[in-house]
Length: 220
Image 1 (cartoon, rainbow, N blue to C red):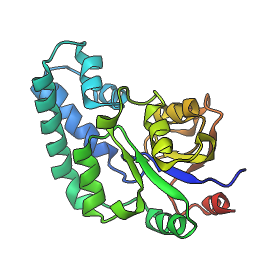
Image 2: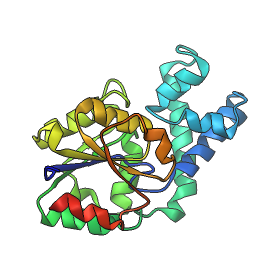
Image 3: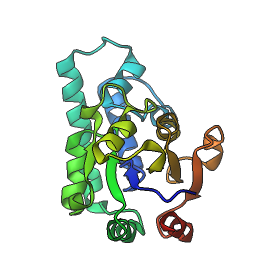
Image 4: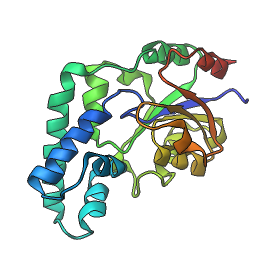
């Protein structure tokens, strides 16, 4: 395997194990506020892409005005942050991986469908912003994952070829985006089972967290 020039990290479920908090916040908003009548499993299946895209999928495009979409999104993120803040920490082993990548001059970026408000919440409260030379958020792309724009834009900012990038992801849509961008992927099994990624030939390994010794091979 060619030694990577860059690591691109998804955020939620990949750097922090917070997806259950997003799920709880969306479940409350969609059912208590918006009366969607969804089960928790149905909510979880919709949790990818931009907040506006999620609401369009559930209620149909045009159901809400841009202002209403923004207000719903803000209420959801404030609820999520309030619940998750006491538990905010990087997934085990990630601090050491970030430091090793920095020492080995592997460029690093964040490529996430999260809004800047949530990315800043993580980077600034955990003091890890200096590790990342590029941050691509929901605000920076036209279409979210599985469209490859998030990852190709990150590679362009880092000035590295796509095939030299390793993407760290936890969701099939993100792995598909990496595949379409021409990038290999390491999958965190925080939210999905290995079988859900069977169709993606770009997955090079599955890990529970960043203490997995197989990650040392990325630096050889």
